[in-house]
Amino acid sequence: MILDWLKTDYGLGRGHGMALVHVIKKGPQIDSKHVGTEGVHNDESDTLWLDGKASRPA
Image (cartoon, rainbow, N blue to C red):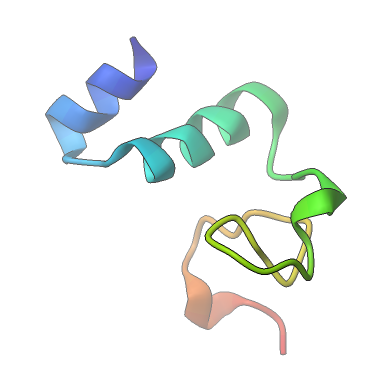
């Protein structure tokens, strides 16, 4: 539903779409199990940045 809409109207893939669905439903905070890990689901922070990588704090 939401993923189909994001794919159709904005051309987003499943991964980016799921990130937006998470933010819509639960806010930008992600589970800390992904912070500092390796692999495709790793991140340096427990917050999803929606305004681009360049705007992340140093």
